[in-house]
Image (cartoon, rainbow, N blue to C red):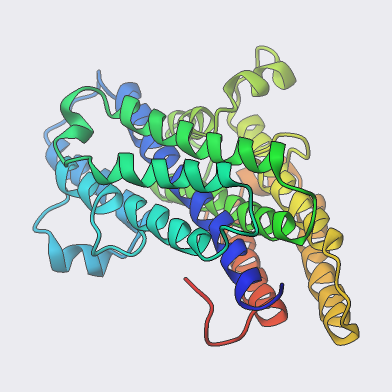
Length: 327
């Protein structure tokens, strides 16, 4: 079960979560556009270019993008992060990677998972760049989120709670924690280095809240208060909201703990990575909302993101054959 199969399952979870994150991060941008419709300046073309450049920074490689494309306009950036097969981190590439991994494990997972991911890929393969903006980008990315939700729903409802399921969920929740932190980091940069405690921060954070489908849940917690510090606390520190960093890491720890391992040496390594996850959760548990709001340079977000990336490396060293780990 371990090594190659564990790696494939883990990366199925990561790639499908990453595909959903692509849709959510693009949604952040469009929410911001709606917030700024009534704002017009002489530097608007430059500002628009910077906005699309931030998406490339968050989802891919600026250097790779600039080698292929001439400018950061809407059509070219959307093509790069969604349908560009030369970009290994594009939406279509992520779904294709997940599909290829699942193809090798079809006898080990319910057929509904293959039917969903194969249908998602075939739907996406038929899309053309002009389809992204022909109607509303919200519609295209909404359908993307529907496909990933269908896959997750089947995995939750029909997969036996055995190692195969736990490895998929480990990949999902590690990717989710990283992605939420990347979204926060991207909009931190958009706030022009002033930190969250600034007049510029509110529209960006409100967009983050909507992009993680957390607006209604947030309002139940905070009633009529839609303050910057409350939004930051909710997205990073809330232990019950499914897309918060804290919740994702808690779930990661639970799924690692649930793995059934027979080899004694492997159980020792398993305990070590579980302690490593526990340290990151403890770091988050010690944070106050003021710590995040007053973190002007984004050191806390960068630290948590680095810790999640280290967890990915440790997971690979523990459960996969080194040298064969996907990226």
